[in-house]
Amino acid sequence: MTPARLRASAVVRIAVVALVVAAETYLVTSLGDAFSPANHYSYFTVLSNLLGAVVCAWALVAPVPDVVRGAAVTFLGLTGIVYNTMLRGVDVQTEGFPNTVLHVVVPILMVADWLLDPPRTRTTPRRVVAWMLVPLAYLAYTLVRGPIVDWYPYPFLDPRDGGYAPVVLGSLLVAVAFFAMALLVAWVGNALGGTGPRGRSGRSGRRG
Image 1: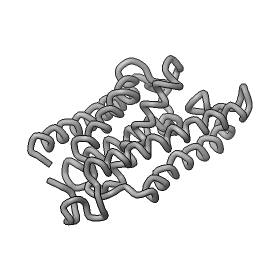
Image 2: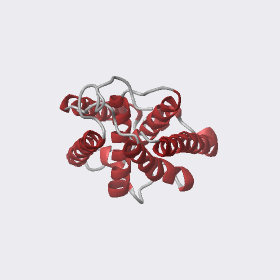
Image 3: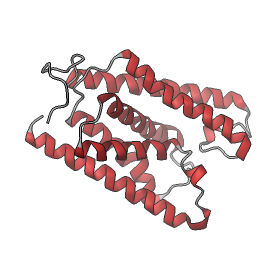
Image 4: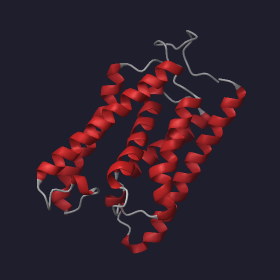
């Protein structure tokens, strides 16, 4: 990794951390007494952005396993795609600054960081499958919790009006999009950086 790319990656990571902290602070303070931690942290958007911020903060001080970085890039890439194709114009409890940061800016920055500092190790099909397990677990959590608290984070996961048929269809569409995103992240990472278990240079660890 060249010094210029190293500096650019550091700037991107600092920006991700700062933006997520600022957006979350804005949301919590603006909601005031209406803020519900249980509901707020049941949004995939919020969870994926927090993961991205943690990964970026971690990467600023120590190497992050490529499988963890890839997961964060995939989840945030999916967040951006789903919002801009299925949820734009829908009330998802965010507006203005935090909405743009969490749904657009941070996903773009995480993808940019993957391109600036591609993975050292090759992303295998097993890793892609492992990434898929997270949104599946989130789907199960949402559908089990929803009837208990009578609340769903996203309209396409809410069966109260149209039943479960639209939920199944929406979930399948998102699953296909997620799988495509995971494959793309893996392919780009392998093309730019990861060429084997120990990376292009044959040494373990990440490039400095």
